[in-house]
Image (cartoon, rainbow, N blue to C red):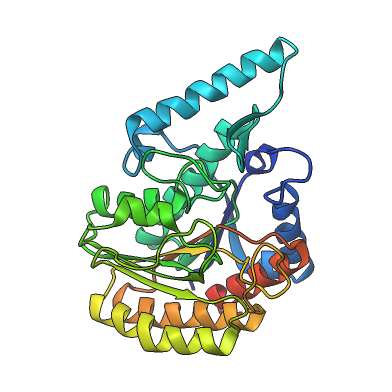
Length: 317
């Protein structure tokens, strides 16, 4: 029986945006601790995330964006070696340290390696416990804690390098995946469905959008039953009609009711339910192929519990 892959790497923990930043290394500790304490690590196939090559990043990003991040990383290393700053801000919310370059390559590399393994039939599906997250990173710009868009890179990789004809991207982070939409809007080989709090950062996703985008903005304090109803009414019929050959998930857990960075009301059971719905679609149309990658989730205890629920559903245990 095929297992669920669990991709991660210590380099992803070394990326640090400064004291008090919510997108902190301890997020991965919380996930790892919960996976270990629950016994779930024994039920998955743990794999080390490789480094992505820059040419694969350029499947989703402008070459100049990739080169500029590499240049900033090299400049930061030189400054730190000379006794200067150990952090460099890209925007008010997003910073780098000397380990960020390897972390972003591991984060994208995890999604790419998971895609390879799932398509090859080595794994049934996979979850990537990586950081920094990616869904706010546009083709040309890092923003919102995100530097490169891990899910968009993997989706384009499945299309361009594996020759898939149709892939779906599902985003249930509390924030709109504006970067993923920027990269994939208008690509008829991709269907992106997302649900997110509105109005809320990054203040996008509401109103006109490309035909291959299904955005479901919801007001603050929306709870799980209402979100499940919207998913049943809108996402699932659209996914059935599209018949994706693979599903990619931007798995943000900051819509949890205990997460202070958002004001939605999901709980662990909701994440498990969403995951099972996606698995049903994947079994009918995509040979069960799902690759999920961590996005948000900043209450550490709620994050660990939510990831456990998500991975437990993927693994069927």
